[in-house]
Image (cartoon, rainbow, N blue to C red; front, side, top):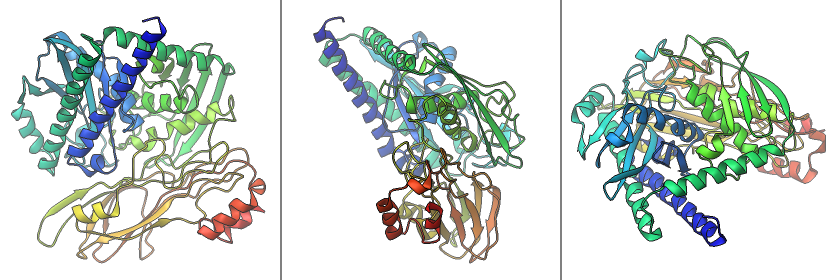
Length: 542
C-alpha cells in the first residue's frame, strides 16, 4: 500500500478496527455482572495480530488494563501458541505478573479464525469485585492470602466451558454468580469482536490482518518517533513521596529523551513493601508509558508500534518491580501515581505541556456486611478526586486521572446493597490555588440502610502527602476518612462502621498551576458564586 488510494483504504480499515474494539468493549459493559465494569468502566478491550502485538484498543477502558494487557497477550501465547488453538477456544488468567497487576483483574484471550486459519486474537480485561481470600485490600502479606490465582488456562475449549475451573472459582469467591457471569461476559465480548472483524474483512476483501497490521504498527511507531525527535534531549528527574501502607513510599523517576525513544527508569525508588501495595512490572510499565503518552505523541494510535518507543524499567526488588509472592492487591494506590511522577520529570523538558499533580489514585472502599434477612453483600464503589491544573485551564473536579473510570452512581450503590448515601458533594477549597485552580475532590457519606454494622476496607492515598502545585500553584487538599462522630480512620486497612454510625470519605483535590495572584478576577468570582471556593479560601489568591 503506497498510493493515495491505498493510504485511504488503510485509514478506513483503521477506523473500522477502532469501531470493532469499541463494540467489543460496549458488549462487555452491557453484559458484565460486576458494577465495577457496568457502571465504572474498569476494563480494557483490544485486537492483536498473530504475533500478539496490540493493533487497536477501545476508547473505553483504563490505561492500567489496556497497556498491561498489551504485554500480557505475549504470556498467553508463550504457554499456548496460536498454532495449537482451535475455534471455540478461550484462555483466561488473573495472574498479576502475566496480567494486569492484581488478582481482581481477569483477562480473557480468544483466537480469531478465518477460513479455518487463526489470523489474530481479541483480548479483554475486567475487574471482578471479589476473588476470595482477604478480599480487595492492602492487608495481605503475600499474594497467596489475596484470593484465588488462576494461571493461564482454558476457559472454553472448542466452545465447551471448563466446568472444573468454574467450579473452583465458585467455591472460592463470595459472589460466585457474579464471578462466573463476568467471565462469560469477557468471552462473549471477544466473540462479538471476532464476528465483527470477519465481517469487516469480508467487506474489504482481505484474508487476514498481516499487511494491515504491519502498516498500522509501522505508521504508529514512525509518528511517535517523529514527536520524540522534536523534544529537548537529555535526562530529567523527579521524585514524589506518597503515604504508602505503614510507611511512606518514595517514587524516584528518571526520564531520558534520546533522538528516537524515551526511557523511563525508577532508580532510587523505595523497596518492596510488606503490605499489599506492591506493583508488578507490567502495571508499572502501563502507567509510566501512559504518563509519557499524555504529552508526547498523544495523537498517535496507542498500540504496540507507538508503545515500542517508550521503554520502562524499574529495579528488581523495588516496589515498582515486585516479584512473587509479593502482595499486590492494592497496587493501584502506587501505580496510578506514576503518570504524575513521569509528568513531573517531563515538566523540566516541556513545561508548557504538563499539568500539576492530581489526586491520582482512585478511592475504592470495599463494603462488606449483611442485611437483617441474613443476606451477605460485598460492593466496591469507585470514587474520584480532582486532577491537577492543566497548562492553561483549571483542573477537572471529581475526575479519574489517570485511570479514566467513572464514579459509581448513588442509585447503583443503594440498589445493589443495603446502603444509604447521605451526602455526595464537592469539597469547597480542595482544589489548589493558582492562576489555574486544581480540580476539587468530593465528600461522600454513607451508612448501612438498616442501621447494622458493616466493614469497610480502605485503600486511600494522599491523606498525608497531598498533590503538589506547579509553577507557584498551591497544593490540593489532602484526603480523609472518618466516622460521623469525629473518629479519624487510617487510609489503609479494615475498620468496622458501628451500628448507627456513618462513614465519611473525603477525596483529595488537585494542585494548582501558576501564581494565584494572576488568576482572572472573573474566574475567581465565578468560583465564589458556585461555592467551589469560600471567602476564606479566596484569600490565597490575593
